[in-house]
Length: 158
Ligand SMILES: [Zn+2]
Image 1 (cartoon, rainbow, N blue to C red):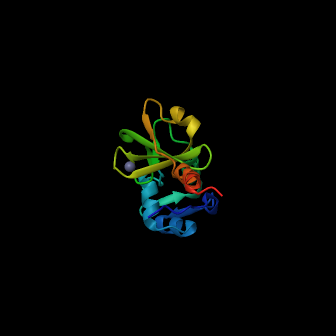
Image 2 (image 1 turned 120 degrees about the vertical axis):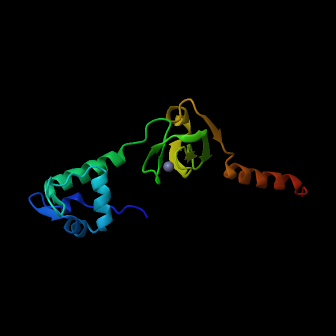
């Protein structure tokens, strides 16, 4: 299930939140809050049940959003299953040309085997995927462009 986008500014800085309250405030399931705890969201020490300060929760969520926007380092594609940039399995990457010079790099995640995609400019493949042998798939559009030309050749002359 894809993670829901939350608005960190819904968290009031000077309030205290239980897991349930923080989940309700942001419109997410309690399990999301538990996941954030595992990812580094700090609760107030020694309190039962778990209590967060609004300031800490907001800072955590803002930092998390910022880190998500960071582009993947060279040689990696973002894996949505691992939720992290991942290297292509066996160093195999394929480029599927799209419109103009942009297209999609596709590879299998080295860690979990899930198909990963990354939009890329054909002229920048070497910079994005250094030391990797990127296979460029034949663009289907070029094949279609050729078809009418061959048909014209078969037409009888008037
Ligand atoms: Zn993965």
